[in-house]
Image (tube, rainbow, N blue to C red; front, side, top):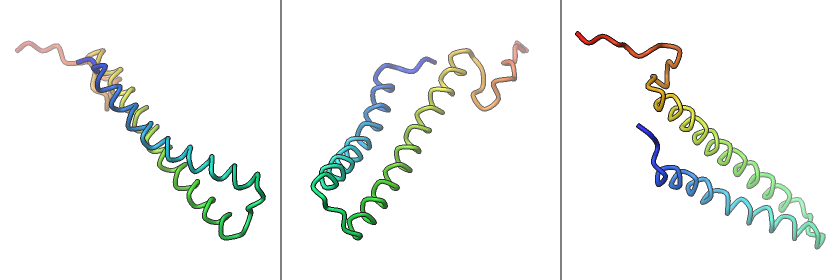
Length: 92
């Protein structure tokens, strides 16, 4: 069972859907910092938003990486949870 091109694109698009809002937040943060808007409420808001964004992106990228690993082992006919075990060859 090989991952289809559509499935890979779907998973990458999911990451991109989360990445674009993160980029907008970072852009707004940078622009406001350049204009000298550094009030304490804005700093806390920015810190919280960027913290949430880092966690969400970390989870999305980790899920994608684990999916790739599982597909690698499935292509080789092994169980992704226990790749050290060889597939059974019993024909009984």
